[in-house]
Image (cartoon, rainbow, N blue to C red):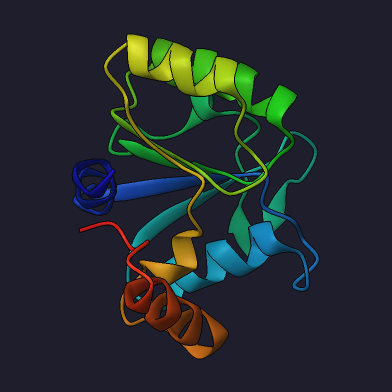
Length: 148
């Protein structure tokens, strides 16, 4: 899992699938966290034109070629479609946020050579880790459940 996490963050640009215009929703939180850390990030939502003032893409297939990593913050069935789009688009890293993954999505992405992170909260790994996520990460390290 650590190899997939490291591969994800080596990307030059990222897509966030399931970004919301509502700042309280987790997709929006993830999008802003990536952007606030100076990363090049693109929002993806099938029905939004703009999020946080930025152009929103309708699908992974529309993302600029520089995007090599995608994080999903959508229901598992939607993630399964995102995996198909990632395969078609040549995405090399995929982070399925907790609650977004399904066995079928993980298996399909892995079978096509996509580095997959699942069952982990991206905010526990996005440096510098802040707020409750830093505390949670510390606990995970203490109990030996933090990927090395």
